[in-house]
Length: 260
Image (tube, rainbow, N blue to C red; front, top):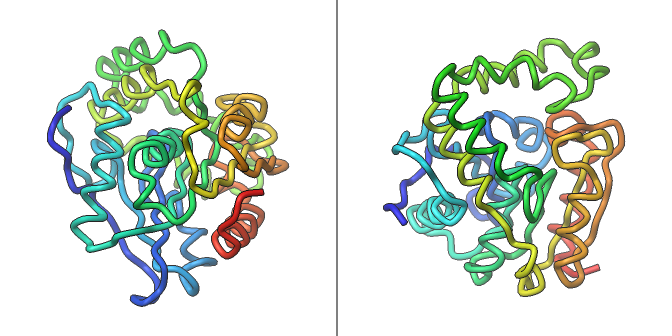
């Protein structure tokens, strides 16, 4: 495993509050969580970060692994002097959360996993996607995001927000995106989820074709006591598409800190 990097990050909220770390989806930046900051930063100290190769984080050469991406989060916590935190991750961010729950549970108060999987669909397609993006750049991924990242109804009702999200993808380095694709392609926690003991909330978007509810449910079924909820009228980036519904579920989970 290569050396961990300290990801680019932004901190909001009271200095003396419990820390909530937010891990984004592949192809997005910490701006994915603007709506969480708007609603939750009065009660929690929110630390958002960019994945390596995304946003303003360093771009080491790939391939990456989920273990390396999780080590970046631990490095970030150490650099900030944060001993324990709440962690929420979307998609690959949720895979990072699973890894933290398995290997660094002592650092977590709670875990929230959104639109993720214990093993992502069709593992061989991920290195193929990595090769395609290295060849053609992240712009080549833009047309396929409609209906995947967010519903068509959302894009029609909020075109500026849809375009803002696509701007994050366009700004992602080809190497960073490809390296994260390779991390996704080798990820598999199906046999080990039962070892996660952190209070866990698992959220799925009802209309998500990338990680459908049944695939996300596998995570909740595998983690003892995990709570599973499906967010209606939401695709893959449910934290941006239905923030109020997500934020209410997250606030309840962080406050109660118990298994279902």
